[in-house]
Length: 590
Image 1 (cartoon, rainbow, N blue to C red):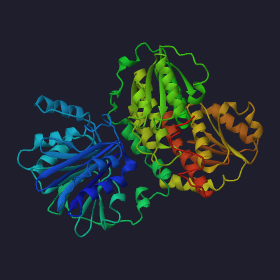
Image 2 (image 1 turned 180 degrees about the vertical axis):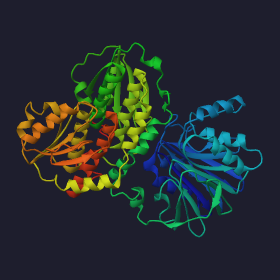
Image 3 (image 1 turned 90 degrees about the vertical axis):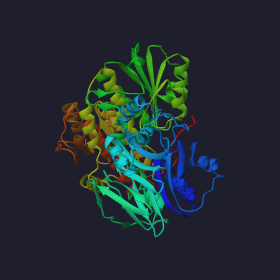
Image 4 (image 1 turned 60 degrees about the vertical axis):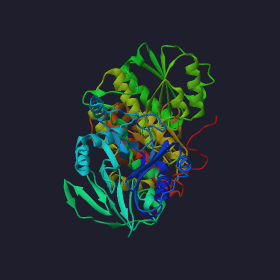
């Protein structure tokens, strides 16, 4: 995620930068920093942790008059959250802030190191500014363009250099960046929130846009041609801006899952398959089985992972609920890999289970969204999910990215190459207006029954559990997830028209078996909504997914549908979708 702010003007540059960062702190709070160019000199400050730490560190620094400022709040992807890894990053006479991931930073770094250029940080961003100065001969803008042409990946960039002290360079590719202005000032930001109330007009940059601001004149280039500036009016509501037009943060986070899943894959897959920089293959030597331990949504992701790892890597994999594992006097063998999954990295039961595994001498691996969290610090190895801040309490994109990391791990351990299928699965997460409108209309029929069954087989069983959890978390309706084949072993006694069944029917996995389970419920007059690529005539409602040739593509499309259904039911019931009662985002107590 991360957040970028830029300012050009004379109204307290430092305050404008820090105020802007504070509005973007939800995008990352591992570290923060800023650089200000004034009278040809660069002044820079960086601090680990939240924005208040940067503010405290720079409290005695004051600067007046016209100048250029860039600032950044970080969500770590490459390198630990340390002051050296914090943005801005520097070369000899230039400073840069960057959102996104530079996929080819290692090759750039190796090339420059051969030229005698030294690197200080573990980040991909430092390669940008070092490459810029390497390319700089006489013309700074020409060097900036050349640098952009050599970068692969996603980026939003602001760059200052003492070689052109009256200029700020900018570029956008796959990561959000806007320019805003009033009569006297120019702003850059990752979203609207930092500039609302300060600027009147805005340009939302498109992928491939780049340019520079020189003496308050903005030069914007698209397809290597300078274009005219097409300003639009800024919205006035700051929370609306943070939600980027969505009604709730949860809705925004459902919609952005395809983007964050792409971030999860960047630098980890290529045409040859999966390659984790974070975990070398030697780490898994001597491992005979795997135990996955987690709570809540992360437990459901772990269940999906157990199916995938056993199928692709042929390694026996069990899944444990953290709160139960701690007290069952588990047998811990040293040839077991212990994997813990946590969105926050602070989940108390999972953390304590990890400590037990460490004390027993097991190799440990964390799958987590927060670098430098307690679980990450304790585990031997970590794979970050890169989901970014999730403000909705009911998890959506955290679950999606956890499953993706486990899927990649299954490929990695089993020497499988499902790269193209993963990319198709990401596309399956894109929400169409037609789909969302259908779910909105259907939701009014599922408000007043005596409960819900979510049913599925194989990986669709944990997805059924997760779908039921999402619904009960935010709608406060009773919902249960079941293996479809288990319905006849007791639960089918509840079937009647007021029992709503959400059936997850895969065309690629146990289709006929699951279909027969659905028909068993239909014959008992249960009200059934089937999510599938093929309509079942005996069911009441149907949401069609796309035809595909792999069950994980179906999985991700169904995942989005169950999330949207839970949200729309909750909205119709008048609930606070983002902050459901009795729940917290990170459970740090037993």
